[in-house]
Image (cartoon, rainbow, N blue to C red; front, side, top):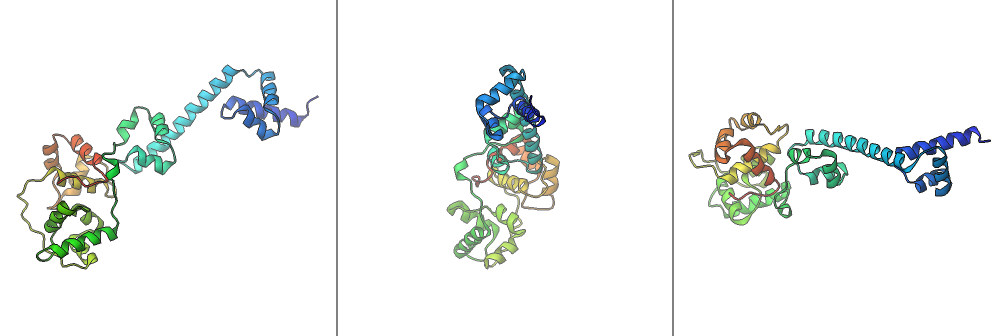
Length: 255
């Protein structure tokens, strides 16, 4: 006659079998018995393959729902990111993320553009480029002269420098170069590249929501930031502007 311990063990085995997450061999390894013995216990309990398949499918649905909630919460705190960035942060494959989100994946993530070109500049990298630009400048280094240097030689945009150091003066001081006064002639036409740079800087700023009104508030009071309306007029819509900027995130758009 089976003992209480044996009955409890068999019930546990049946529960694991119904859960569908473990194979017979894995269940057997847990209890120190063969796969065949596990199969016999499960069969005696009336659990067939159809029941196990249904249980496995139900467990997968629950797991996908859990992963979906986890991913959405991560996206809420990390807007305008790629699936690859979420995969690295959460330890889930890109395929698993797509499975968990379904059609929402395309809405919640942006697609990377020229992934191989992506680069994040350190403070030391930026200081090195500032020093090189200053060495070729005819006088104190202005942001305009710096941007001209970057267009010819490559490097982080002036907007990126401002974002990192807070002001052009602070950036020049960090690099040990003489700061030139920014020219206040803003009658020039904003290029797609500079608008994209500004949008990238905005998306990387703390608390950015991605909304038109939020960007417009962020850009106010700064002559070197195009207004939301200027950007929207150029790209035709706010969504088109966001798509252009988010697809270009991680590398420098052409000015």
